Image 1 (tube, rainbow, N blue to C red):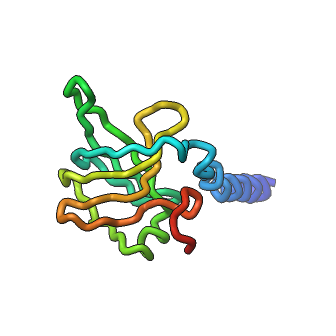
Image 2 (image 1 turned 180 degrees about the vertical axis):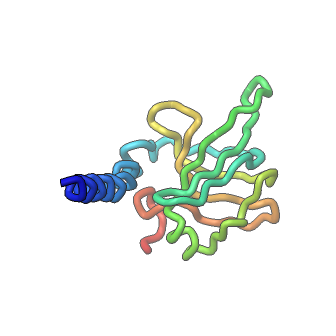
Image 3 (image 1 turned 90 degrees about the vertical axis):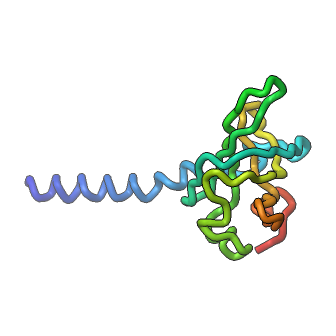
Length: 135
């Protein structure tokens, strides 16, 4: 009896862990507004290279000169890798320029379209959903 309960519990946890990443994924149009492009310039504070999307965080000065930390969502790591990105393409402290689309909820969040690195290299970071190249 105890062995059956452990087996059932293990199966339930396995199923739960299997669907957890799916709940985090969303379409571009669900969160971002393609009619609201923005260009942001700032210093990289954090890089998260994880599925389902890469995130780059940068400090951007607002109109009052106060630093606002922006969360910038890129495509999936595998897609970005195929487009020339590597985990060290941008590093903490790098000053980058980002062309992106604002979040619909008016937060300091945007979907990355293009990143200009400190050496002037331009790297596409969007998805086919935002008008980028098909993979």
